[in-house]
Image (cartoon, rainbow, N blue to C red; front, side, top):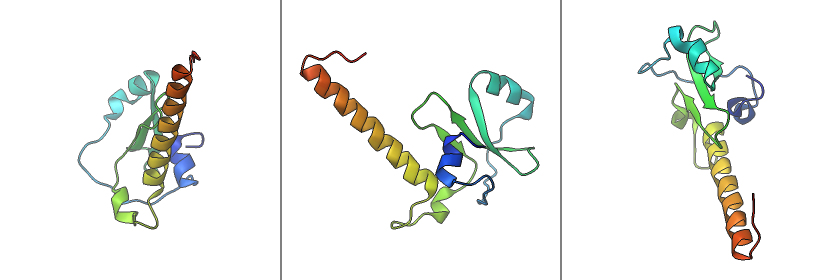
Length: 109
């Protein structure tokens, strides 16, 4: 779904991943979950199963029903792993910046 972290990572609207069948989102609660802030950012092609979820107000909360580790290599990380590490580094950088401002007597709101 455009505008989501998953779409930004994959840079595509249609992807192919190995699905795992452990847990599923109960579609009876899907509207209630999305109304409460859960972002359904990926589904099966027919839309019947939720494959990717996110929390919009979190630096990086992306959960998938696939095995990204099967498509990841040390020199070519899976897009979700790459962007997760990128988000962690960005968060660390912003927190270090906040600490430096606080040490120098600058209040950051």
